[in-house]
Length: 247
Image (tube, rainbow, N blue to C red; front, side):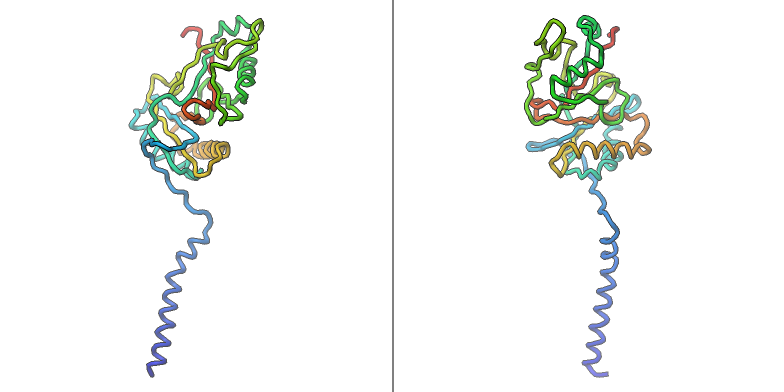
């Protein structure tokens, strides 16, 4: 066997081996969708731009246990939403609540449904249940134009006998980190920043993923999901509940 024939056979063998080494990676590239990157909780920082917050609670778990569930269960479930950053824990108020006073509704002859419609018209929003996975006896009024600043103190209501009543003429308001019914138990809040800068599809995708993960998320865990405003200058959502007459 001369050197030329030997070198030719050697080149053929090397080419065959190289092709075999490429086969697993080629096959993997043709299997379909890429695995979503798992977001890790990181502290808040200057310049962050989160779109959504999630507040989780349980009557039987500690804050530390909730934080572990967020990282081990919720974030993997939400990963397909294409999350760029996850920030937590959150400190400080991130949502605006209004507690309707039953005696004020009676005074103006307003039903709860009529009041919700009136409030939605005043802030240019739509009424629905509080997003997430929870048993909150409350409603979320989602503003249509969330980028426009809204000073809630300038919003007025047209009530019987009072055409320019303040927004909170029918109840009291407060900013909070978590809903009032959860105030006596541990809560943990975190924020999500999407890779794509469109909030509505991101919110819908996250809600669908929460629904799909119902069998994975512990039954005792309640979750509230909501939109974030820019330092409360553009309040995206008004959460509304009815105050208990005995409280």
